[in-house]
Image 1 (tube, rainbow, N blue to C red):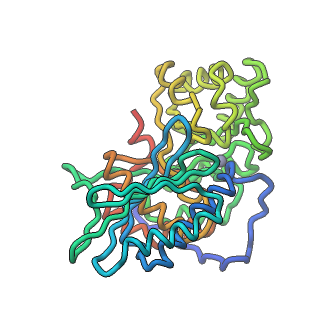
Image 2 (cartoon, rainbow, N blue to C red; image 1 turned 60 degrees about the vertical axis):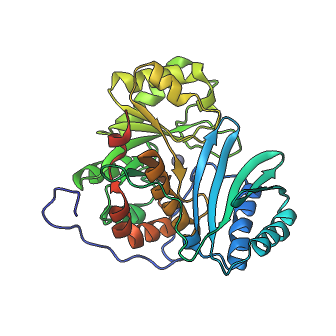
Length: 360
Ligand SMILES: [Zn+2]
């Protein structure tokens, strides 16, 4: 099913092999997830693989709470796999990664809580099934669950954009206002029937550079309002705004006030990219009567195809649990490749829609 109205399908450009035609990137994509968390997450999947647990035997999703995000995993072992062996493998691999492990044997399954610096990072349920393991997925309700994928940081890389525009998925593209090509990218995105958003750079907590024109908490309201207006002129026709970085700025209700006013004046939607679990941006937008939402999952915090595919399955699982889910990804070549390889599967599992359709 083609979602765009243009009569002819767009040409599909050749994809450059890895390492070739690398885009010249000056600024970082998003704020990186903590290196120790990533190491731990990788170690969990390596331990499971080492214990012979196949990808299809686990279902995972993310819980977002005040203290941060907790990854949840449901794992079903076949009658031939040993619960004790899998548990031992997890213990062996995870302790050196600096994790604290707490096991509880419940009726019918084992529950594992994993801590990093006394923060609960992962919860895993391990259970053994009869002959045909089936994951405890909730049955689909009436109609398919809906999912949207927002591609952030668009506009810096022309080659990546043309590959994205050749995908047969209703992607929502969020363009950085300082990208030299932003207005042209904006026009192309709209002409090809994709949804256009403004990716508004905001102050992060760490040392990452959000780029020129970013909103900083210390700037006065007048400056913040003017920067937001300028950014909008660079991405004409955007229907919504989400934050680029911003883990510090989105915690500051007073600083958010002016930019959110501009968003309201322009009748735009707002999506909190949720780069900090302590963000108040969605709540503040809602208070001002702006239609708003928040990101549920990042697809490519780990830029490798296996991890991105896993996150794509998690997006589908989340959509089934919640009825809908919103993912954010970036124009990495690995991400684009995984999207291309999985677009038919994705559209079969869920109804793929634009972000604006999931925002209330
Ligand atoms: Zn970004």
